Image 1 (spheres, rainbow, N blue to C red):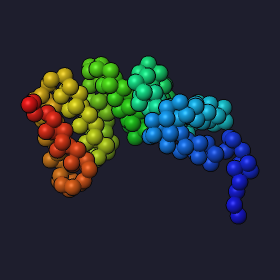
Image 2 (cartoon, rainbow, N blue to C red; image 1 turned 180 degrees about the horizontal axis):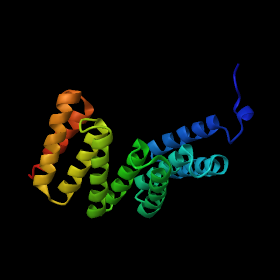
Image 3 (cartoon, helix red, strand yellow; image 1 turned 180 degrees about the vertical axis):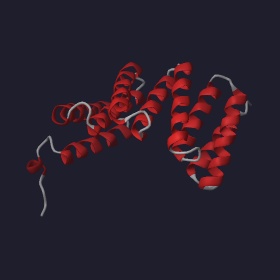
Image 4 (cartoon, helix red, strand yellow; image 1 turned 120 degrees about the horizontal axis):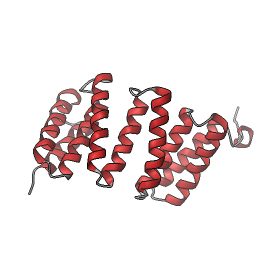
Length: 196
């Protein structure tokens, strides 16, 4: 049996998911206005139907924030990311992977603005929690360590950045293998740590 979209309605999970996928495609193509319009539609519908604390609503808010981030619309991105992070902390707890992702996204927004202290504080918190929950060798933890190293590197804190990049590279090689994308990225990041 084939289900037509007019049978599902604009508020169904399947319809909202489909709209979000189209919006993501637009975002990946740099079609910001179209992506934003669709993400706003998904977010507003999710809020009305599911509530502001529902995981799908929070994901739609995070998607819209990422669209703003990609355009350099820092204030709008930050406002949504803070809301998503605070809600996820309250609903899911500080150790939930979705909460950690929200914290890392907000830290990235700070990083993109050169707000190094705020970025560093959040990245450190994400690393500490990821290590406790996922372990020091988990790819998410390693990515967070690499993000902190990048924060140090962009401040000219070469030694601290290098130490973290070496750790990420060695752990990635041991756990994921030499040809894994995270390992290769960590090797490139280490090379960037060395001044010309």
